[in-house]
Image (cartoon, rainbow, N blue to C red; front, side, top):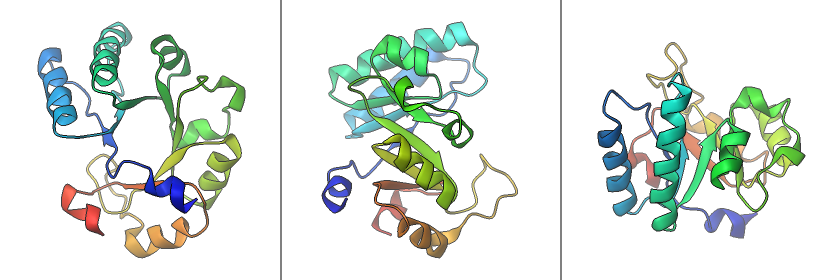
Length: 174
């Protein structure tokens, strides 16, 4: 488990929902990849499915050209179509069957508690994100588990874990 964790990229970029300008979204992704991001979760809740499908195709091509590992949030069929890894939302963990995994691609999950971590391990996830560590605008009203809560949960799992929620680049050292 220690070696597996050390082999993980230090950062896991989770894309924001695109605004009105898809080209600008793709350019921000390209700039992040050029700056050295090694792993990306393509995520755009609520976006029109046909628009998202086109953006995923372009984003997958950008990631592939730069050798960056890309996972798609929540959509196993679209991930399979583009040869991407799959990132499961926490609520998907309970219903996901390991046979739905995209062959040869990474599987990850969002986790919020020890039960989520156990389920992710049982599914054979390659890594997880655990949070929210700190308060975050994406989950208003949630205080976050704090670094002590994160550390306690981290000790219950052998999976490589990325901290998420309310964090900035300066938090990587922590």
